[in-house]
Image 1 (cartoon, rainbow, N blue to C red):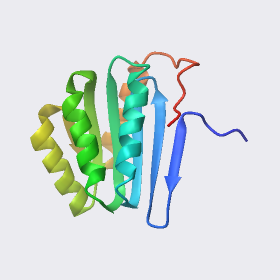
Image 2: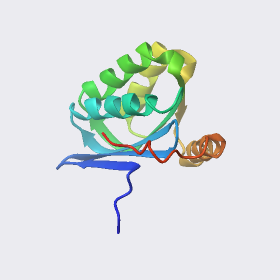
Image 3: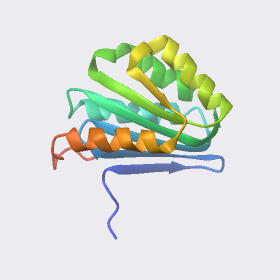
Length: 146
């Protein structure tokens, strides 16, 4: 079976980061366990890469199974979002753990209305499906490669 060019997976002993591109201009980050600081660089690289192919991004972060993270996992993407707010439609975040909820609150204070938080999976998935349905058709030359 061929590997999906629109999915990248990074796994270590403590956690997992999966980056998916379900449609042009739409990124889905799935974060599980504990994410080490270097994962912040991968998150930012994914957003930078997608901006080469899309005028504006919609970002989804599935942190339902995220237990914790090193500070760069929050600060690097937040700093990136502050610099690129005009090119980001919104960032939707599904969180469950207390530390992820605190991170969502901090990001919301810094970034305002661009951040949309969820504590239940169904509304998060409905929002993702709605954005993907409105996205333009996938371009052959713009697969996710980080």
